[in-house]
Image (cartoon, rainbow, N blue to C red; front, side, top):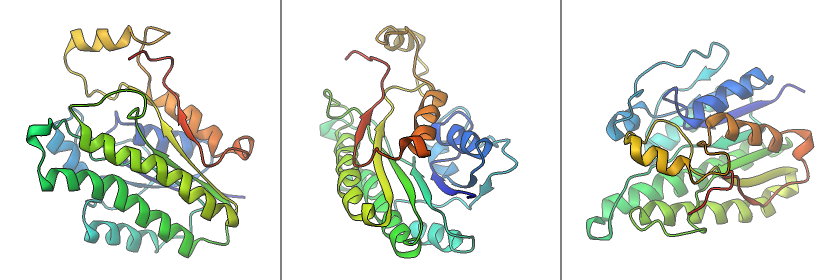
Length: 244
């Protein structure tokens, strides 16, 4: 059976989302990819705005998933295509924010993008695609494994995402849809520019190398395959032995 998948967080070439879109497409999935180039530019990623050379991937129009309009725009565009039975919610809003810098707007940008948008996308999946078996993967972080004191709004939102996976798995399990959350650990997507900090983090892994988007794709391809059919409602920490 030809499988269709929505992958969010697909914008810049060096990101996890782009690698997932490429690998799932190469594995025979029809991939619908969504991203937000404006967010990448605002964060200052070096490859923001660069195009992804993925010919078979269907690129949906960018939209801001921190807004009701942005989520509705994505759902409206997706409804033009045949229903998906798989979904990877890789999008995220993430900034460093010390406690003294917390604002109403900054906290809610994390919650709306990471939590609210994910909940609404899962709701739409259930409403429109309830007759198909499949799999959903969410992305959490290492917030439960150690302090993240300079990015607590992000950590709090990701803790909610981890619990969302557990809760949604019970509801969607009735329609043969599995739901898991993956914490990929520190992944080299080009966000660390300080060479000294890069090497320091690198040495905390068992293999003395950073995790890569390819490592993440290897795990998710398994979770969405028949071989991963017995795994649901789990929060999986795939960190390569990273030591905090």
